[in-house]
Image (cartoon, rainbow, N blue to C red):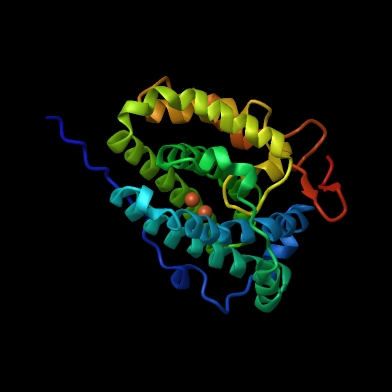
Length: 282
Ligand SMILES: [Fe+2]
Ligand SMILES: [Fe+2]
């Protein structure tokens, strides 16, 4: 009899209060010296990212409403994951507050008004296997997205904000890895389906056009920030992690977060309110 391997779950342990205490502020010099357009873009970006991290709670609640279908290891992983995502929510609230002056009360009100619609995402929510593959897709997308944000925004606002950016990248990488461990431990017999399912997720993301406040596929709202082949490269990263293909080259990976659309000095941030790109044009 072959015993299933035990997934090796990891967690990047860090204490938010030590990195960015609640009453933190950003020294004036950083606002003065940040390149043109960076502060405005960072505020627009955070006005969305803050809440999508908080949406982890509704995804967690949704999965827990079906917890009888899930394995104990999956639920243990999900507990670690939620703690990290809620820490990200609080970390981004503090960052957003320091940068924009938006009050925590206003953020609470905004968050409480959100409507979480799981219907458009049904194919990702079928079972533990589809949840894990979607989680890998989402988390590795976040790794490269935060890497871009770190280089373009977080690094300009002092060591504490920069540290937050570093932890975000590291945590999302851990989440990606933990989901891979679960798939390898409990879903070996379905690994042959991963490639086709990833293509389905990518198509779904392309067709969504908007983000449904469900944590999954939040990059649907910012696809213009990334090169066209972004999903194809991250799909190959996922397949490689599961032993199903070759890792993309370091040049291909770098391009995911260093690519800049022609004509811009800074990747544009699409302002949902004005329906315009809010960016510094070179
Ligand atoms: Fe996160
Ligand atoms: Fe994550």
